Length: 111
Image (cartoon, rainbow, N blue to C red; front, side):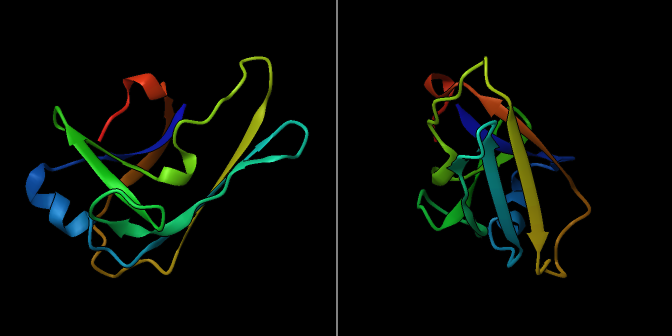
């Protein structure tokens, strides 16, 4: 599974340049029922795939951030998980958006 942080509303490719250059820090922690950390990435939005920033994926009028640190995880349906998302040092240029977390099968995922 890959964790996605869906951006709503997304106003198209013109907004992507702004979103990929924000100096906002996004921290995520996913812990399983036994207290084991499954993933814990942190970083700002950026361009290109890398393990130090959040990548903006766009298509079909939708956009979502993803991070290599929470991609292609093996999650079990029989286990419960706790997801914590922390947004800090919000860039004053950040547009008014909402972020919704979702998970996508990794075999459906691609840059």
